[in-house]
Structures are given as structure tokens and as C-alpha cells.
Image (cartoon, rainbow, N blue to C red; front, side, top):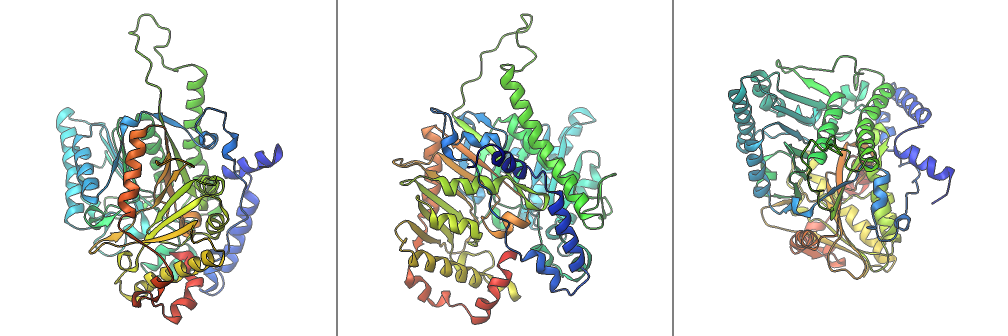
Amino acid sequence: MAAGGGSVLWRRRLLGLGRPGLAALLGRLSDRLSRRSSWLLLAPLLTPAAAQVTAPSFCLCPEGVHKFQWIRNLVPEFGVSSSHIRVLSSPTEFYELMKDQIKAAKQRVVMASLYLGTGLLEQELVDCIEEALERSLQASGSSDFRVSILLDFTRGSRGTTNSRTMLLPLLRRFPEQVRVSLFHTPNLRGLLKLLMPERFNETIGLQHIKVYLFDDNVILSGANLSDSYFADRQDRYVFLQDSPEIAEFFTQLVDAIGDVSLQLQQDDTVQMMEGMVHPYQGDKRAYCEAANRRVMEVIGSAKARQELHAQTGHGGEAEGDPRLPQQDPPPKPDTWIYPLIQMKPFGIQIDELVTETLLREAEGGARIYLTTGYFNLTQAYMDLVLGARAEYRILLASPEVNGFFGAKGVAGAIPAAYVHIERQFYSKVCRRGQQGRVRLQEYSRSGWTFHAKGLWLYLAGSSLPCLTLIGSPNFGYRSVHRDLEAQVAIVTENRDLQQQLHQEQEQLYRRAAVVSSCTFEQPSRCVKLWVKLVTPLIKNFF
């Protein structure tokens, strides 16, 4: 990494600052293109990623401190006891835990997801929220109990019966306690918004964060609020118990995105908060800058609180006051949690930078297990994997467990497009003679679909992982450039938690078959010529 000015430049770019000129240029290009044909409207969305930024190396950490402490220079660092963390393994466990947590909540339920489904299981979840709201009113007459739900506008508005209609009864009955925010990407506007039909408009950009929060307990996952994710769609889930600082951070993050989103009204209309720029009717640059400030305020204020805490010891009001009962200091943390945010439309690229650094700097002899339900790595991520020293075990969905398998229309060809992308990457691995270092594996399970994403990092010589990434990103173009994403890096020195993470990884990979040249000779891997021709044009949209 370059010293001095290079470090400052990198941090400025990381925080989304110092880029108004570039934002203005992109805005002018988009406005000009909006006056041309509908095909040219897509041109800005097909452009390659900007040049990569050098991120800090592992070696910058002080001796004796865990190797990933450099991440706290970018985002808040939450030190916790590993006893507060539980790794879940199944959709039913995830669903039942959510219902139990809603029923037990006394202060708040905060949920961020792509969408809420419309089936019986989803209705049962909504009923649990309604019962919690009723109990809160019965207990005190006027309750401070709060429900905040953040979804994507286009996905949540699809069809006549949709996420909005599922939540309207709550909003109408408890208007003072329930907030439903619908994020609308600023990139879907003008003629593009007018011409793009339902479903296709979801390719331009989405709210993709998945966080489920109940008082001071948090579930981080890649799963949406839909029946398949509660039954037979494999994902990942981690439960953080009694974690007030983490819960408050994600509450504020959801609030921040909610503030720049459309607010669902009792008559099923939407409107922006007073004084906020409209995402697709207002000035795009002004909207994105306002959204950047609002999200970065959350990250900056959390870091400022932690710095103040470090400067003043425990930072509490009871510090040094003999009149108040003295408490034992909290146990020294053995696990650290770092929230990683990626919102490229707003110029926020923290997750991208951290992920690239992990892929690049993993030492020889280290192993990285990376999984995604949609194998469509960015060019930067592919280059880093192919040029790295560590061993890679990449888990992806076989065509039969791809979420688009059997879909109607054009969407039905998406699994074949993923096969084509997979084969191209496998060919690159073979041409470089790296089949031993980079291995692809396909997840297969009868009657199930696969949606798990994240990675586990095993240091050289270790049989257990010390770091995992878990959350919403799929490591593809959409995750990096289009959608709003969030995940956490969990770094732990605790052997029991490392064992939980190792078992989670093994459970997923146990159902996978190693990809070889014979894999692509199977009839199910036959890709039609038109799919091969179209894939390079559309791969940035899925």
C-alpha cells in the first residue's frame, strides 16, 4: 500500500467522499442516455467496474492482536463473548426462532429483507407481530414498542397481492408504532422506469440487506421473508444474543435507509419523508449524496462512540461515582464483529474493499471456503482468486437447486447462464493448471434450492476457521455495483465458536460434488447457443 497521500486517498474513496465530480459526470451521462433509445438506457449499467483501490494488508496489525484488526479502521468493531453467538443450520430453525423472538420482544422488532412473501407461513409471521403489538398496548395503554420493516419497492410491489398488502393491516391498526419503508433505487428513473416491465425492473437495483432484530438480539442471514426460506431453501444464519451495541447499530442502519426510502401509507400509496429528495423524481446526484451522508452518519457515530469509550475507560456515567453500585468489568471479548456495508449507488464500498483484501492477502497454506447461490463473481474477485496464494474451495448451486430452475419465460434460462459462467471460470482454472488450488463444488439436494453465501477463512496450519463473512452479498456484479448489501465479518479466537462455524461449512460442503470436465458433459449442463451469446450482455443484471 502506498504511504502518506495514497492512504488518505484510499480512505476518502472508501467513505464515499471527494467524488462529486465523478458523480456529476455519471449523472450527466445518464441524463443524456435517457433521451436516446431504450437499449442505450442500459449502457451505463453495462460499463466495467472502476479501477480497484489498494486496501490495507494483514501485516499492518500490531503483534499479538488478531490478524484482522485493521478492519476497525474502516467500520465499528464490536467485541463480544462467543457465548452470545449461535450458528443456525436449517430454514425451520430460522423460522421458529424468528417467531419466538417476535413473541418475546418488548421494545422493538426491526426487519430488513428483499421482500415479504404472501403465503401462510409469512402470514403467521405477520400475526406474531400483530400479537406483540397488541400485548404492548394492553400492558401500558400507550406503548413505546416499535416495528420497523424495510423492503425493496419493486420486489415488494410485484403483483396485486404482495408485501405491501400483507403489511397494510398492521399499518392501519397501529399507525403510531409501525413503519414500512420501501427502498427504490435511484438508477430506475425516467424513460427506463417507464419502459421496464414488472420483474425486469428488479434487475436495475434492489434493497438486498437481510437483518432481523428483536430488542437486543439479532439474526444475520442471506434469507428473505418467504415460505421457501422457512422450509426448503438452504441459507446461512447466525444469532447474536444480548448484543445491544450491534442491535442499535443495525437499527440505526435500517432507519437510515428507511429515511431515504418511500414510506408506505395506510391507503397503499407511498410518499417520501418531508424534506427528502425523491429517489427517481428528484435530482439523482442530490439524492445519492443525501443517502451517503445518512448512512455514513451511522457508521461514523458508532465509531465515534467507540473511540470515546476507549479514551474514557468504560465511558459510563457510573465511572468513579462512589454513590452508585460498582460492577465488575465485563469479560474480555474473544470474538469481534465488523459490519460491512456495500452501497455502490451511494458511493459506499466498504464490503468490496474488505472482501478484496481478504481474497488477496490470504497467505499460502490458508484455505478459503467461499459459497454463493449465484456463481457470477466480479472480474476483480475472479482475478484475485486466480492470482492468490491460498487454496480456494468454491461452493455453488447445481442447476437443479438454482432458485430460477424451472422458472417460466426468460428466467428459466438463467440456470444455464450460470452453468456457462461456471464453465468459463473452470476453463481458466485449468488453463493455469490450478485445479489443485482452486476447486469448484456443486451443491445438490433433492427437493431443495440453494441460497447460502459467505466465506470461511482457515489460517495456514489450522483445522478450524477464525473468520467468516455472513450476510446478503453474493460476490457478484449486482452485489458490488447495483444493490444495497450488508454482511458482517466475525473474527473469533474461541475454539467452540470456530467449531460451530467449521461444522456449518462441512454440513454444506458435504452435499456437494467436485466439478470436473466430466461435469459439463452431462445433459443438464448443455447450454444453448443463444444463452451463450446473451450471457455476456446480461450477466451484470443477475
